[in-house]
Image 1 (cartoon, rainbow, N blue to C red):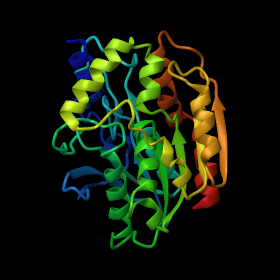
Image 2 (cartoon, one colour):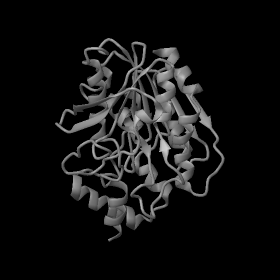
Image 3 (cartoon, one colour):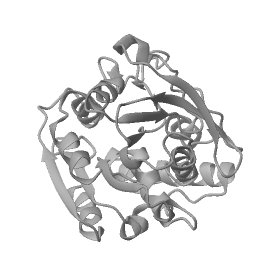
Image 4 (cartoon, rainbow, N blue to C red):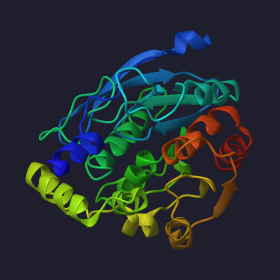
Length: 297
């Protein structure tokens, strides 16, 4: 019982309705769709800028979509006191001249789900990152553009794994830099949550039956060494699920130009809000992100 309940909470698709629009920020945009290598259709927004530089944003998982996080439909399981709007960073990136591609991972927002329809914390979602990059790399207007990746939580895990895939991100010379926001894989998160071993074991069995994946063993972390572009890592010291050794190990494994940006956001009322505070922070504090992309793109 506990295994199914926790599994549904952490891996069930369809918990992230699309709740915002670029038009609310006076941003012109185009609705776009493209397919991942396994045929899953992904949907998003393309917000044109006035330079030949494109930022692809990959959002965090389960209860988020390209627009960010909303309490709508979450019931008692609210992650934050208010909505978190990822179009805030699209706005400042656009004002800096960048074109922005925002898309929903499979099982989120308006994108289709894979089969079986479970979120995998980066394993299948890595294909979505590659598909987003390929969409830009083959686009008639942007095929010669420089690309930066703004990758958040599960989005950065999926991006990291995508660098390790055969015919993955390392094969796209257009990618020039990445911003990695709060790296965290599922095994580290489960430990940080303090889930009892019997619950973790039950979740492991349920998800292995549902997906064929061993979630206690599967991690994007080994692919950190495969990242091939300059990477800025942003991490809140007051993140409620912070494993500092894990973040430092990820940073140490990067074999590229890199920078570690520790931020300290005042503590909120619980662990989950302390983590999600960083996702709100990146929408209101553009300086480091703009400097990083401005330097390499």
